Length: 138
Length: 152
Image (cartoon, rainbow over all chains, first blue to last red; front, top):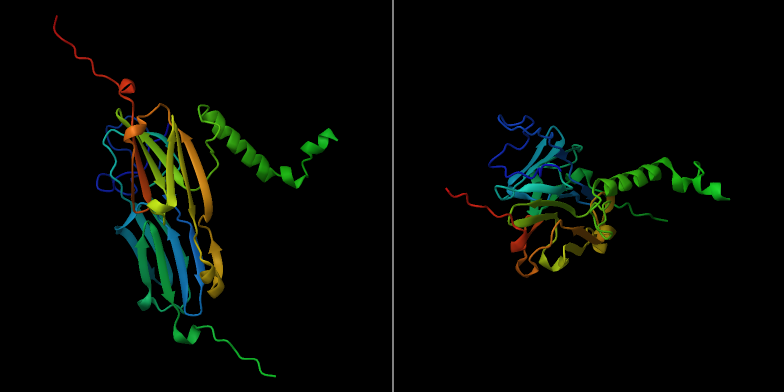
């Protein structure tokens, strides 16, 4: 049997790697969850969609720095006090993933939306980097 | 020939498939009480199960889905979650170049067998932030009882 690693972030820190004092049971090191993503590019923008179930706007962090995009989030759930884990596919409560993106992204104009645990990022490209169709003349 | 079945160079029985076979069997040995219909190798939606003295709690991680996309059924101690999720619309596919498609797309069914029977009448399912929480109260007869010790 494994620990249900879905902790309410109010009670336990997101990535506690040490067993709390006085706890006789060994605590399994929590896995960092890597959210699966879809990435597509349109003429105007690069779109990223990430599955981050359990994450609320308050526990989500999207950061853009040095041409790196970092997604971070913590699952917030209200678990009953005396809950014992029976079976767990998901063995962590903290998501993290990083991507590198070129200077063509207009970082000022990135828009993020979180709905039903799905994060959608629209990252518009700067005007000079947009795809232009070149007409072919005969 | 019979040994063709075990040809190590046969792509259908490659190392990858052997590992997969081993993994799925290890899973079934590790949890021998799983129902035949409970598919252990399924990766969507991810499910965590916990219990207290009074109830079972099933957490279904189904991002991007709401009530109308999901069906939750119970038959004795078998809980089935069925649904469909479309990630990219045809229009989006047409208008863009897709570089990565890691998110699950399509129809899914997952069944899990709960260790005990539950009180099917009072099951409750709620969805929030893409996580469905299903609360299944245990039958009163199965709940542990506290026996009061009295002075003689």
